[in-house]
Amino acid sequence: MLPEIRGVLATVNFLDVVDILLVAILLYKLYILIKDTRAVALLKGLIVLLVANLISKWLGLNVINWLLQKTMTVVLVALPIVFQPELRRGLEQLGHSKLFGKRIILSEAQTDSLLAEVVTAVASMSKSKIGALIVFERKTGLNDFVETGVRVDGLVSSELLTNIFIPNSPLHDGAVILRENRVIAAGCILPLSEDRSLDKELGTRHRAAIGISEHTDALVVVASEETGIVSLAQGGRLRRHVETETLKELLQPIFTGKVASLSDIFNWRPSS
Image (cartoon, rainbow, N blue to C red; front, top):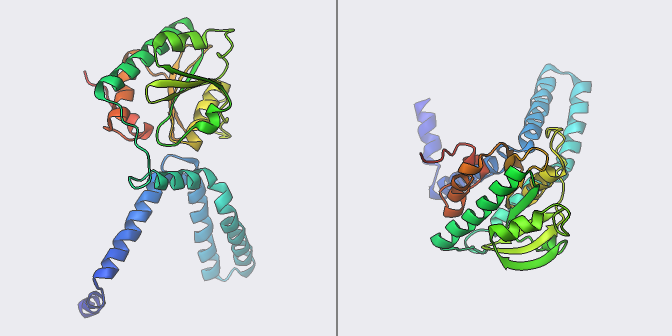
């Protein structure tokens, strides 16, 4: 066995090592991309089909093997459609590399002021049970959704946000989109999530928050009109029952680069 291993190792050169490392990195990036998404369940189903195909071939079950092969062919053709959100997100992340991506830079003081104003507004609306949907634009541009609303282009303040979402006001029944420390537009229409596994209790506002987070890297804060519960959405995930007292400490790590996404926020513990 050892001579065979030595023989194999003797044929490996530097480029082979680089090739293996690049493949490993790509697979890891793919895992990070689909982690905690619906794609994981689809991938598990694909693995089950592949294993069943191999077993049926080994056992000589020709009819079943033929059916599974045809099924695999259909599945492979359908994969780009089924994984469309993940593929889109992956291409967007590729475009957001340091070489191509834009980087939004706010000073520490600006970031602190922005989050303080948003948290103050959300806390007030949550207490008064005023529904709110606030979208933080990050690397993915949201101009397509900005065009569905009314341009505002005003400095973020708790008073402005609260007035926008006051019931029966012209812009309350939509989303506010923030770019850096400015309110770019209000009354914006967002895509609703089509995830059928979502809690039936979630209304249109929460489904819109999840929907925009599935299509972009936006971070969304939601205040429920019925219960006053505050939620955070990003990457197709929703964290509910966020205490307004700790909301700023949950958002701060993303804006300061300490954590990258809501997946990390789930494990983030505010400082005592």
